[in-house]
Length: 101
Image 1: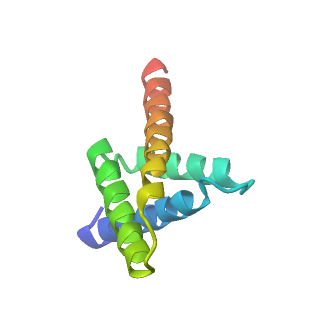
Image 2: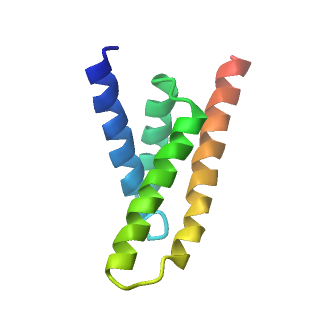
Image 3: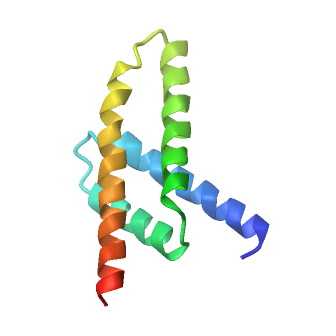
């Protein structure tokens, strides 16, 4: 994969993860499919877990800055650690299933 392809893929992964974060505490019926698609992409692209954590932290930082600009508290963003835990759990399950085959 070329460097340009890697950057495009990482931007798509970040965009997909942003949407998962936005939808995570809503009643979005397609959230499970979005998470499954995201995990499949990350798994197939062999994206390391620390990079997923980095993407999460970057997005939370962006959300925090936006909330502060709007004069709102960013304390609710702490709840989004659950999203990261959920994503990592799904990724671990994908790795576990791949190893057992």
